[in-house]
Length: 375
Image (cartoon, rainbow, N blue to C red; front, side, top):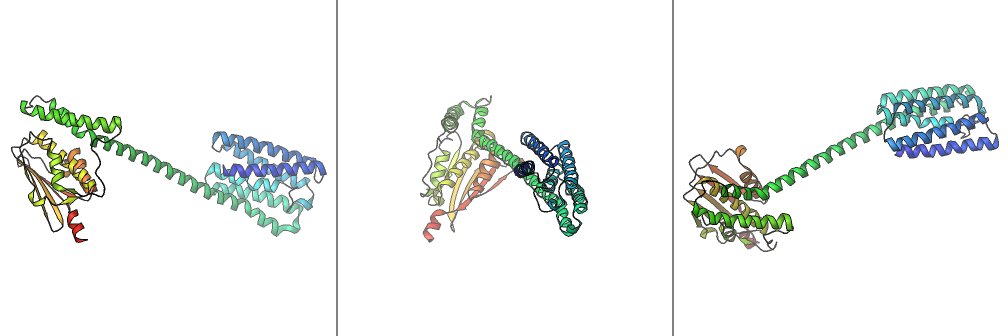
């Protein structure tokens, strides 16, 4: 678009030169008609560029041939006094922009320099023939053809590379946004799908059904609020109000009446966390308890809290079936809802398990109450 605007300005200047030639007779009328012809070609060229948004070799070659023809003819017909530094001899100025369009087509410094040297060489030969006294000036001006064209080729190559990188970054951003949206969707529906699978299982014990139904109803209510209504089912906690660790545990375990839960929270009941940490910790505990509920077949599930030296510790232990503790084999719940979510909120977690040996999840974090007391 920039080169098109420059070419449009040049076309207006060449047309003005043709009008002056026609009205004053300062140069042969053939020079004026050539100027008008070159202007018509330039307008057609620009219309094509705007519509096609690309350079075509046939147009570029036609541009070069018209420029060379204009240089040869006008240099032989125009008065020698106008050959250097006079707009009545319009052909040299017209040809200066041609290497720029060659650069747009070829994207090659080498090919642009070749075409620039051809145009500069012809300009040098035909102009010096009429003004041998201006050899130094004409030589310097002849160098502007390959130099100007090569600079344009370098610039266009750079802009093309920047555009390609921008396209690649845009594509990467789209892919990242898609992955994030998918991860967010999986995060929200993971527990719900687990509940549905458990409800549909043939080995569900009758005493489990009331709890599972309550949990399924709670999950359905949460999903309906967050995805259909657009409002979170869990009311956000005030950002400036610390939350007790014991309160988070009680809130997370309230829907798991069918599990053989034992809570030992006395040693950590005064520890506090930030509201954001409380939400992440609650979701992680719910995910851990769902894993126990769906897979562990445990006879005892213990949640123990402790706080000392400015940090708190929460241990969730069961004596169930256990599993291979290789992190590469962790499911979405453990990997995303527990480990990644807790780490993203400044907490650490360690999962220890073995087939037939139960599972232990150890979660630790900074005690906010100890931090506030020391400050």
